[in-house]
Length: 365
DNA sequence: ATGATTTGACCCGA
DNA sequence: TCGGGTCAAATCAT
Image (cartoon, rainbow, N blue to C red; front, side, top):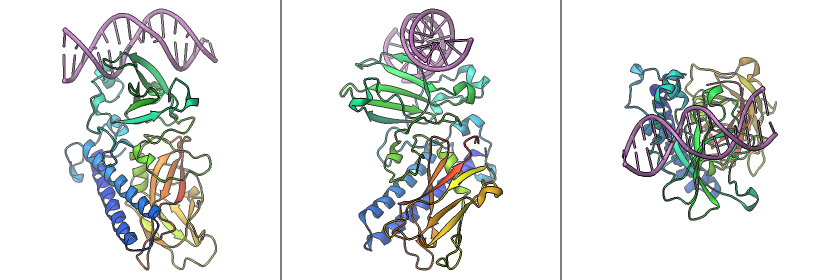
């Protein structure tokens, strides 16, 4: 894990830049005959970008210049930026980290978060369906172990406390509280605290999306499924180290010149496990070429198997890595793309084309 | 036997 | 002092 402050600062800058670029593209879209859906995608991208930027600001210590960046304790880095909480999109209390200082001496002894209240916290409201049963939304995709239940003053229903099953084995300090609503017993308010750091704590079923995920027009391919509160920092780190090179991999001749997406590289790395190719490319269905996805994180021997297709040769805006599925694989989404020669957005790509990048699920960040 | 849940006690912050 | 959050022993389930 690299120094947190410098990394966060870079991530913050990249998120802001992304937001600006998306806003610019939106401006182009507004002056052209693009679909409302494409515009909506850009708006969501902008909101997501600023959400994350705000989150970083909220979670950062007082700014430390990159050149003086100090190492972040492993535990702090591990519990870093939450994936979902968010203000711009109207989600709750990102400033409310009143988790109670349960740390005590045990935390220090096991290198766990020194202050539980430092863990990010956000809330989802989940309404149960009739076939869900009275037990409520117990299965959100992660493996939880109940460790307590309390009657809460003024509440009709007790509050249940859960921690990650893999707390002891993988030092994963994610917890959640489940509180049934007084007003509507079919609604459960689930407060998550801390981010899952367990590599094997993957969900057995799809998890409900955290707020920003819920607004994402993500298309899931095959068995890859959405999951909440997953590693924003991991994904961002991957993204910032991502390099996308377009190539005439199909053997066709439509892409006349290779294009390159370049991202700031990162020194950390992880093994590339497997990748599968593109999903649909939009209404016209054109497959004009393929792009090769490479990254400093990808093992050279397997890089060639990482492909996703683009319909034209995009040069800016690109891959938005959104989530980690239940196998621990990262899912990347091409949010939008801009044609290099015309500097115009590629409408049939924006927001609807996905690429999946599978990351070795055994890798621990 | 092992792991999960229950539940009373304890700790800490407001 | 009180309420919320967590611990841990007892109990339950597989």
